Image 1: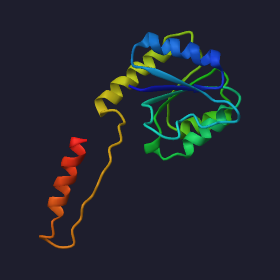
Image 2 (image 1 turned 120 degrees about the vertical axis):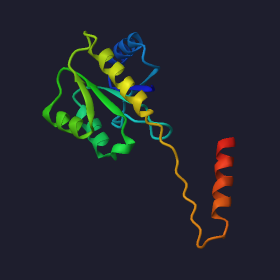
Image 3 (image 1 turned 90 degrees about the vertical axis):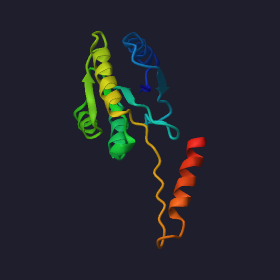
Image 4 (image 1 turned 135 degrees about the vertical axis):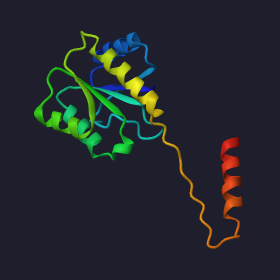
Length: 157
């Protein structure tokens, strides 16, 4: 399970990373949001399976960006913070937050991550495969031949 921890406080990110390491559910990367940057997800590459977002006074903007993404382009979301404004809570619900954790002192984060790990493992994770459709105009024009050879090339690579 790939975990991304995002927020604006380097100290909070390290504390969360320590808690994630104690839960032993998978590797965790951190993303420090600076210079007016609000999007907690990488612009390119594979999305994480779980996004752990540290709540701060500007978290509503990050949650709004997440909630505007299609559901297929959002990872499971856990929000950590003791002061979540009403506007941020609304966007967290719209973004599909799986858990809201007020204090990092308990093992609530570990429990939540282990539960998500079980759910994602049962569902096969969120690896998004590519679908290629081959359509032929009429029977006998080689559509099956092209589809089979494309599948063989992709499997070899």
